Length: 286
Ligand code: FAD
Image (cartoon, rainbow, N blue to C red; front, side):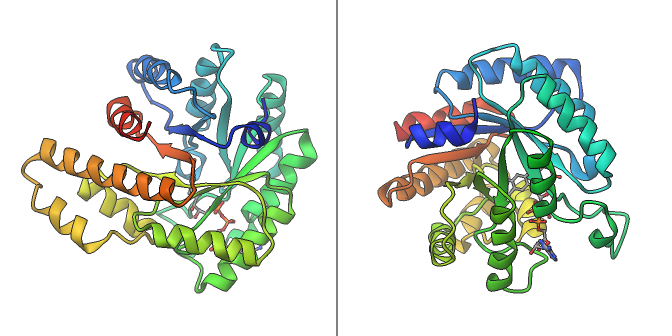
C-alpha cells in the first residue's frame, strides 16, 4: 500500500527505519527485529541505501526478505549520487515489478574521498530531480528528507525551504525529518513549511540518544544540535554504557512526549536495527 494512503487514514503510529545488514547473520537478526516491531502495527518500514550507493544490492536483498511478509508496508531508500539515469531506471523498474510502491528519494552525500564533488555534473543532481524521475517511471509514492535545522550544505533556512519546495513541487508525497534533539527546531520547520504553503505530511525522524559518541559523530555530519544538558549528562556516563543508554532512552521518551503534547502523533524511528531500545520507548508512549 502507498504510504501516502496510510498517512491519510492513520493519524497516529510509528514507522521504523533499518539499515541493510552485510551478513547472513545480520539478515536473520533483521528479520526477527522486524517481527518484533511488527507487533506495534507500524505505519511502514524503510531500508536505507548506503553512502554513495554502496549498499545497492544489500538494500534490495533486505527489502525483498521483509517483503515475504505480505502485511508489511515497505519503502527502500534510493540515492542518486554516483548513479546515472540508466542505473536508477533499472532499480526503479525492478521495484515496480516486485510490487514496491514507495521509494524514499534522496540525493545522498558527497563521496568522502572526493573534495569539492560537483553534484550539478550528475545526470540527476538533486533530490528534486530524482523525485521527478521516479514519478516518470511509474505510479510510486515518494518520500523526501527535510531538515529542522537546515541542510548542512545550505547557508540559510530560506534557501533550505526554497529547495525543499522544489522537492514537493516535483511530486513528493510526504517527508521525514533529519534527526533532531531540540523539538523547537521541528516546530519551527513546520511553521516554515506552513508559511510556504507546503501541506504534505511531515513525520519527525527520531534517533534514540543512547550512545553520545555515535550521536555526536552523526550530528557533526548533519548539523544537529545536541542540547548541552543532556550532552553533559551522557558524557559523564561514558564509562557506564548501560546507564548511558537508560538516560538516553529517558531523554528520547521525554522528547516524544513533548511532541505528543504538541499534537505530533506519528514518528519515524531510526532503529539502528536494535528492537529493544525502540520497544522500551514505545511502551512508555502507549
Ligand atoms: P537535496 O534535497 O538534493 O539537498 C541537498 C543540498 O542541495 C541541500 O543543501 C539543498 O539546499 C541543495 N539543493 C537542493 N536542490 C538544489 C538545486 N536544485 N540547486 C542547488 N542546490 C540544491 N543518505 C544516504 O546515502 N542513504 C540513505 O538511505 C539516507 N536516508 C536518509 C533518510 C532521512 C530521513 C534523512 C533525513 C536523510 C537520509 N540520508 C540518506 C542523507 C541524505 O542523503 C543527505 O542528507 C544528503 O546530503 C542530502 O539529501 P537530500 O535528499 O535532502 O538532498
